Length: 113
Image 1 (cartoon, rainbow, N blue to C red):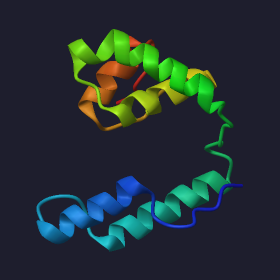
Image 2 (image 1 turned 135 degrees about the vertical axis):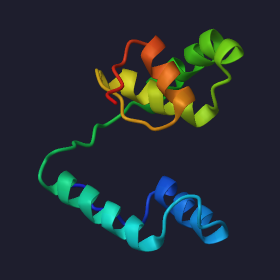
Image 3 (image 1 turned 180 degrees about the horizontal axis):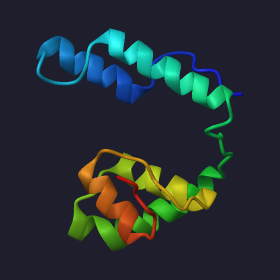
Image 4 (image 1 turned 90 degrees about the horizontal axis):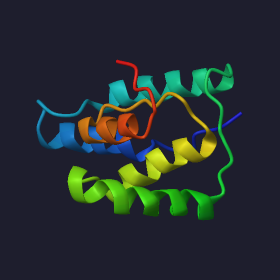
């Protein structure tokens, strides 16, 4: 089981965005519900935590940087996320980031909508 020690970065960022502009992000109450649901899903085995070889992930990310960034404008963390999925042998990739979707799809990952 994976225990969340605190809000993941993406959730914290949305709470920050909402605090600055109520039309963006979401309030901390929704963040807490989302994190509780995520923790319940992890505990129930809906998600599994993979162990990665970071040297291999970086090698894959480097390949993505050289082959995809100049034409797709991908950010470093997008490269690392997609590289991690490739390294773990994932076939599906969940994201709401349009540019990350493009990168994942061109690399053969299915992004369910």
